[in-house]
Length: 147
Length: 147
Length: 147
Image (cartoon, rainbow over all chains, first blue to last red; front, side, top):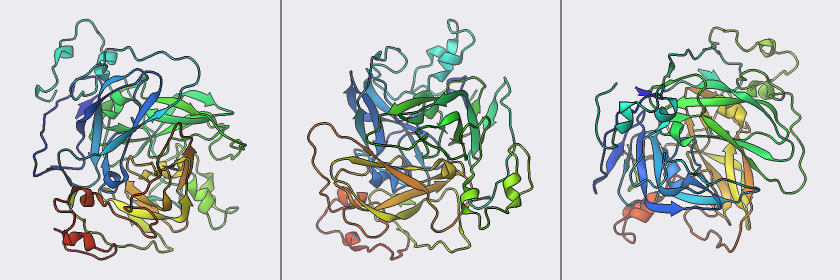
């Protein structure tokens, strides 16, 4: 079970050339190969219709990037039915909205300048004792027993 | 089973301080604590990436508010995997689009000036006899046996 | 199982007047009765909140139409819980974004000028031998045994 207050168990998967079958009722986090840097627009990500027609979501009502976001995009993937995917397939697109008025660029260290897939760091916000939580040290890619 | 033509069975849940586990294959309607009032822009709601990375949708392809909408936002929540949520967590954000040309403000009494979570009122549009449907009297929060 | 590299098995369903129950863990492709033609804006599709409150997605992170797209919209429908739907119900809406700068209109023959529901044609892009793939001849509406 996932928990908003905890770093959740993760396991790293590679997509082999013969494909990987994504199963329903399972969240998969992915990462774009492309890195983007945006300073005066709001970047948003959306899937391609050819991918949506296979029942594969590429984000979970979280299409926004922040103004000022620099890094790789973590994709939240969910398959309605089992679907076989392959490496190097173009599955999403980024578009940009103009801004009106003043704005402050994203300056949080939460997801900025990332180089890897990033699971939710919501637990950092919700921690009772933010300065002394050993769970904050969890490096992504290290598997943990379920809490 | 849900039905477009009927007021559907609902049950009210509270989120206790120790959290509530949302289950997959179950739709949960929620309500923002914040009330908004918008008169010359199109408000839209979207989840936070920290919440999407836990597999929790906050709307079901229905991010739009109407121009002129005044009230609390009903969230349509769906969890890809079981996830424990807590009260008072910031889970979504509202953004605004400019409009071009003339527009008419939302004037329907369907969801306007609401103060509570609102289940779908689509059955009101689809009723064969709109003036004489005893089901229209269902107050939200009252549980009914499944039709 | 669906597969990005293959034309996938499809079966045609009609919505009878007494309704059709959509089941979870099943992707349903639909088609709008309305045809649109857009030349200098970006069309996007979104569901109605009255439909989202029944747990029915109308697209799968693929709300975009292309600039220059002419045709009927294929809907990607997914139900969180079983839901009975009926013919002739208004379930979605199209909105338009302005464009900045130069643009090229959609000119692919993949989904342009369609007249029917269109399953994913991603396999055309991914075919090893694009000129000699007998699967390309699959007409929509013809059922095939699962590959």
